[in-house]
Length: 365
Ligand code: SF4
Ligand code: SF4
Image 1 (cartoon, rainbow, N blue to C red):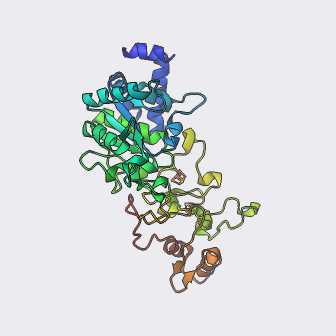
Image 2: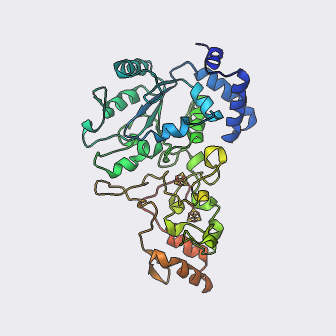
Image 3: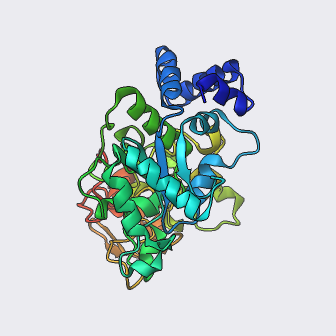
């Protein structure tokens, strides 16, 4: 099917397509001059086996994040036009027909392999598809892929399943000989995937990554440094009582916010085409883009960011010693009065001035 026929098949005009390209170009922060290149890259990729999408131990939340929408937005239109050859949740085929189709497309090679969900390693029987262990399917698909894009916390680093009994691992723990671009999050943000896919299609190379294999363009800044509540943090104003309207805008550190240890552009580029993001909706950041997100439990060897809404660690303040998290607000305010400076004290209590074993993130300052 040629590109024009694909557009018509999806009820789109060429004008709709170009409008979507313009919106996506702006949303991703590409210059306007990139519009024709993006349009050409999508047109060229459509109809080829551009993408194979596997699902391991997942909740399908990342697929939902990308595809579920009442009115398809520009991101969804572009992703839909890219040729996704295999995706269990949205493809019409099922059973052996679907598995044969996967094998046929793997043989052609050269595709981007998107992986959603973690890989069980404790026992292959934790996840089989069509009688084959998921790990074997991943290895076969990875062997002929041009590059692999694990999406969501589970596929990147094990995520929530890693806290359970299946020995859940991320793709990078299984596949060692292919370029891997991790796009974590719980779920992944649509712009991260679209921007990465377009970058790869246009430039034919992997974007600049941090030590956790995350694109620096999206994960190169610390959430805490761009947070709209940062002013309250600097003043030592921490939310302790959800029912007090006077504290509504206060810093969420004492309610378990992991922003000081989380690398993401969530504060600069809000979710759902700029509608909102966790902290602005009064939900502490859970650190879902970090490798140690939700690390907890006896089976989990990662240094964790759980529990999600509590700080359990004692904070060591200079000249003060160990401080109970529930009283740290008063201590910070007192320290400011005696001249220690809230910013300095705050940096210490959030761990930014000392080596953090669990964080090898982006451009930490
Ligand atoms: S601790 Fe959380 S809520 Fe407070 S300023 Fe940092 S990122 Fe924002
Ligand atoms: S603000 Fe934190 S928890 Fe929310 S999506 Fe961003 S990284 Fe994840």
